[in-house]
Length: 177
Image (tube, rainbow, N blue to C red; front, side):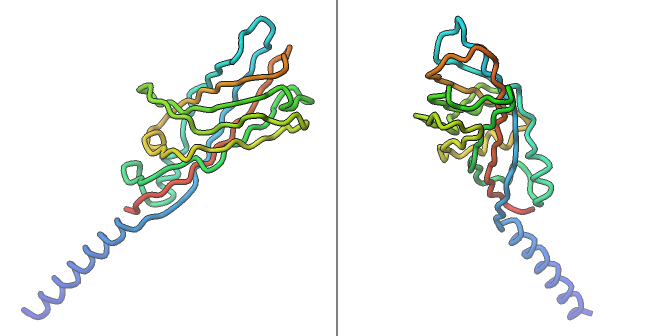
């Protein structure tokens, strides 16, 4: 009886330790979010333009569940890619855009630059990728919502609204529960 109890106790301890090892495992996964901004017609507007996005509901919670983790177990989160695409008008391109910087902002007003591009070429592109800053965005990804602010400098006047879709890919490392 004593031997059987010892074996059961040993297996229980081993199981608990195995569970602790699982908690120390790190996984890496992507979180994808997108939003749209509108650059207004520039007649009578001073430059640079500051454009705010609507609040973005993150897909973080579902991504955490899908990867057997949760917000409080996130170790790091970095923006790995940010891509801009012209949505409207149909024949618009990025030739008017000279510089752009994108900031992420939380509900408490904390803000970090996350991506930028300077000296954007006038080559007729309708899709451009920005350089990311490498900032650890863990506090922003752990929240349910965030917003972005965009500083735009143009080198041409645009007499109509330009709608731009922003696709963001965050690379997250987190512990498994």
